[in-house]
Structure formats: structure tokens, C-alpha cells
Image 1: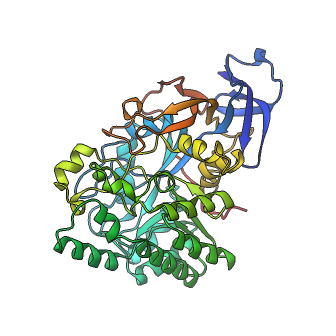
Image 2: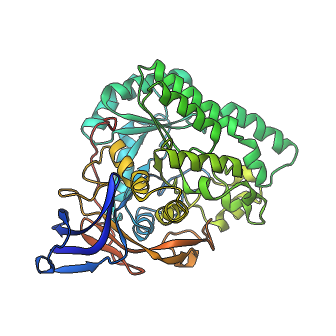
Length: 461
């Protein structure tokens, strides 16, 4: 099967040009102007549109059990939503397993969750919930045999690691060629503040934000930066950054040439803590919480000047009806997380590219090229070039899209972005050359997505 995408502007992280794209058997074979339609079995006219690498979302939580509840998007509904929003690859953060389980336990569980369901290509981040010699010994086989070259550890929640465990994990992961990712929040400070508010009967959603102020996040970021340096200058990736102070600590680390990278998410760029004052404020409970507009502005500066490397979603969906039933209005009993995997590409395109905050190549870097490079998928993913997988999203900047959950494809019952008007429209999503979303219609079968064994970590040049 040969597919030709004609008359569009092809954009990669390093530039843009008018060109046609020829796809053969799921692989990009040529990117040149004026390719003949005679070479193709199918022609897609991209006149006036941008032809971009399919999105790579490296932070999702499908089918995760958080104790209070299990997220309502599995690997079918979650990847379906991703496909309809222009994302063609996800890397899911595995949830915690039974106490004391080995690393391979959760990997086997997640392979079962995804098999026969995913509609786009996928991988997983390992999860480290305790450290002992057996876990340290197991890391090498996870990287080199299983293709899991990044691992997440937590500084809060039930399986949080102390500094000794963090140092041991950082050092060993660096040795075996893996990237350490971290959820950075100071657990003790949060626990004290939450207990204080609950004792006062302050249980409304706004007290979720007040119990987790930005200093709790920023302190943990600074600590991780220093621990990574003490662990032999181990590479470090900070997930879901929400504040200026943490970003300034990361800038300092970069200034002394530490290998650190940082991700933020659309919710921290486009929503703010006033959402918690709404009658339906429980819809916006996530950690770290939404911040104020000053913090949002600082993140946009980081997006624009290159200090922030990746925009991912942290998609973790619990229906509003379930939030109400479980919490009774008490923030401390509400499961954490927001939907958004379908909206990431268009939200950033509209609020970033179409406003002039970022260029088209910068958009590609944030949404596909840099995550592919950091997480062992480059150059198979994240670029429109001969030899790469034909993962493509075509965006029409002349159209607008109003976000309504009734038109989305996840399994939730609301969108935090309800009613937002985006400049641009996703016209087509192709994954390995196959149209999986086209002109408003999802058109793929569950199980077509493939597990991706990722290469060992190498710092992008």
C-alpha cells in the first residue's frame, strides 16, 4: 500500500518546508516536492495544512489502580482518544503492584492490559516502589531484554522512596542505561498541611491546592537535582512541572551542565487554581494541583525559551460522577488526575503556535521529537523523514475546534477544557501509514498498536 500526502507544509523539529510525503508499507520513503500521484494507491490532499510527526505522549496512566479507584480509560479507550487527537505513540506509567513485587511483575501485568486493545504503538515506564539488591540486579534485564529504558519513582504516596533508596536507584539506573523520572513532592509537608486543613473541616477542592503549595514541589525538585549529581551525575527527568520556582532550580542545574530534562502539561499552561472554586471543582483534583496565573506565565516562558523540554498529558481519568460518590465533597477522598490525551496537540497548537508564543518546529520538538529522543524511540518516531514510521498528523490552521466532551473519545464523563475554542483542527491521523482518524471519524481496530522495545537511554545532542 502506497499513500501520498500532497501539497502540505511538512514540519520537523529543525524546520519546515513545502513537500509531499510518500509512504510505502507503513514507512516514509520520500519527502520531496512535486511527487507524482501515479506513485500512490491513495492520495491525501493537505493543501493549506501542516503535516507533522504524530504526537508522542510520554505520560499517561491507562487502567491504573490508585487504591481508591481504577482509572476509567483502558488501553483501548485511552489510545483511541489519543489517536483522535493526533497522538500516535504513548508511553504509559505503570501503577504500583503488590507490596514487595519485582519489576517484571508489573511489566507482565501491563502487557496483559494492553494486548489486543491498543490502537497506537505503546511502551511503558518501569515503576520502582522499593529498593533492595534484587531490584537493583533486575534493572539491567528490564532495559536490555525488555526494552524498558526509563523508570519512575515517587517522593510521595504509599510507595515513596527515601533519600537512600533514591540514591541507589539513580546510581544503578545510570549504570544500566536508563533514565530516571520522578514525581517530585515533599510528602511530609503535604501530610502536615492536609491534616491541618482536615482538622479544621476545610475539605473543599481549593484546600487540595492549599495543602500542596508550590514549595512542596519545588523542594523535591531541588532535592532530586542534588541527589542525581551525588549519584554520579545521573540523568533525571522531572514530570508534570507546575511552578516557576521548580523551573528556576532546573535552570540552575542546566547552567552547571547537569543532564536534567523537564515536562509540563496543558492543564498547567491553560487552567488555574480558580477552577477549584467552581461548583464542580472536584473535576480538577490532580497532583501537583493547578497553580495561579503567575506560575502559568512562568511556564509559558519556559515553553518559549526552551527550558521546558516536553509537553505530555498525565492523562488519568476518573469520572466526575465517581469523584462525587467517593469523596462526598472531601478533596482528600477524591481520586487524582485529569483527562486530556485527546486534546494535548490541538491545545498547544492553538495556544502556542497560533498565538505566536512558539514556532511550528518548537511545537514538534515539544510534542514528538524530544520525547522520542529522550525515551529511546528516535528516529523511528518523532520525525517525518525517509525510514521513519509513517506516524503523521495533519492539522488545518484555517479551521476551529470547540472542545465538547460529547465529541471526545475517552471513557470519562467530562472534559476540563469544556467549551474552549481551539484555532486549528485535526484532519487526519496516520499510524504506520494507516489512517486511524480521518475527518472527524475514528477508523481503527483495537489491537493494531504494537509494543515498542525502546533503546537504552542516550542524552540528546
